[in-house]
Structures are given as structure tokens and as C-alpha cells.
Image (tube, rainbow, N blue to C red; front, top):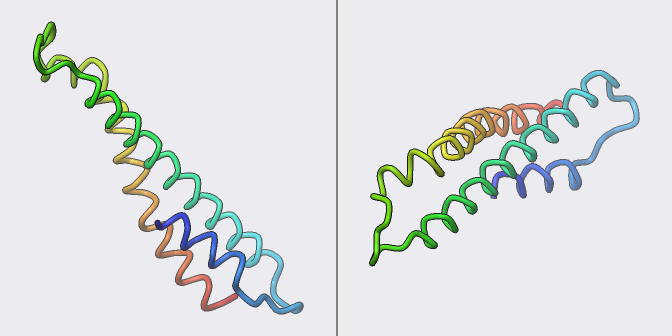
Length: 100
């Protein structure tokens, strides 16, 4: 959702011809970083959900906590870090759109 808002801000904002090119480049870079971080967070979370849903709860060859540590925890940490950096990055986009 945040990546979508960032993309809409980039596409729909009216950028004047006499804007500083460094500010415009920084704005585009922050928007791209926000979209990439939110995409990484969403995809990793989706893959974790698929892994959890494929976990066999009936036979339980491996306890869930062991399964989580082996297969999901590293991806969850990556998703959380990407989201934790992506939200402040989106706030920077919102602040920059006032200048642009």
C-alpha cells in the first residue's frame, strides 16, 4: 500500500520546469527506495505465509519453533528491517513532495 502511494506521488505530482535537478533526483531516488523496500517486505512476508501454510500440523515431523528458526526467522528479520526503513522513507517522500 505504501509502495502504491509512493508510485502515485511520483506519477501524479506536478513538477515545474525550474526545479533544482539535485532535489528532483533526490526525490526520485527516495521514491524508488521506498517502493523497493516495501516490495521486499511484502514479498518476504508472502513467502513466509506460504511456508507456514505448507507446514504439516497433523504429522509434525519437526516442531514449529524449530521449523520457524530454520526456515522463516531470517526472512522475517529481512522483511521487518525493510518495512522499518521503508516507513520513514515514505515520510521523507511526503515531506519532499511539498518542495517538488
